[in-house]
Amino acid sequence: MDEQEVEAAVRVIRSKSLYRYYSLTPQAEVNAFESEFSAFLGVKHALAVTSGTGGLITALGALGVGPGQEVIIPAYMWIAVAAAVVNVGAIPVLADIDDSFCIDPESVRERVTPRTTAVIAVHMNGGHVDISRLLDVALSHKLFLIEDCAQCVGGTIGGRSIGTFGDIGVFSFQTNKNMTCGEAGCVVSNDEHLYQRAVATHDAGYTRTADGLFSCDEAEITTWGRGYRLDELRGAILRVQLRKLPQVISKMRSSKYRILESLKALPQVRPRKIIDPTGDTGGFLITTYPDEATARETCRSMRANGIASSSPDTSNVVLADYGLHIYYNIASLVRKRGTDNRGTPWTLEENRGSEVSYEKGTNPVADDLVRRSILFTIPSCLSRQDEDDIIQGFHQALASPSVAG
Image (tube, rainbow, N blue to C red; front, side, top):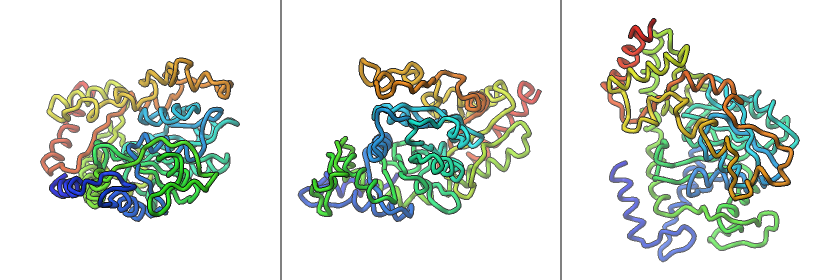
């Protein structure tokens, strides 16, 4: 961030008009952001919301997901994915991952039941889901497909923006993302009806006219709103961040693939599978090792040599220790803690018969990969010397007797 974001924020504050739908002197910052973001992605509709979590709940609401339905989600995700399903009263069902560290389409196929309504495909750590194979599964079983693009803003597959393959795409602009205003999100779709349903869901339950007034005429659109409207202040900052995004991605990809090239000389290291390297956002480097001991010793050695971030839980971390991204680390999911004292949604009559387990061991591929893989975040500000230090850290760690032996 620099003075451009400062100027954008000050401009909105001086206008005294922070609400998007009406104000003293309308700034139309959120409207402009939605238009610019949809053009950037090549999608018809974009709806800004207050968070990625709010975007997921808005997407599920637009699709009419609720009690009596199941939604398939990956074993490697962020807790918000499961939380969104639980908060609409549906049952989350875990599918395993593959060596892309994203949801495995074949595992999805195996998890489909008569109650399955949708799949949430999470493009994890800047990489991609094998979207063409997953689309085949979704279409063959008549399932809605939601793309969670929170960690992959700006990613593409075959030149097409992620978030535009499924029925609805959801993005996050929280502080850890490629572009940020602290906390926000966006819901995108090419489907006019779903977009209008999303508008109603994220607002007060009704769609809006072009001049921002409520429209109560569309019976199929009307629902109950959740109040996830984005404000003009964050909309203005996001417009600046969006203009910077291509350069940010370019810098991250350059650093990541320079480091990856150097790791080819290390037989112990296997990088994750990237479906389309040209569309990788470059923000994360995942390396997998022959066993857990090698992964942990590599991580320890690099940290001892100063290759670490201020937060020990977000970079240079063995994935098994990556907190609420790993299904069995989410205590509320494993224990089926409900949203009320009745244990909703698992105890609802409509959900009787959805027998699911979230215990460790239910997703063996994920269990194996996370215990012997390291996540390394790649910021957009690495200098050549920083890259050299990281490369040296990997080589030193894997040359030590405790690892090489």
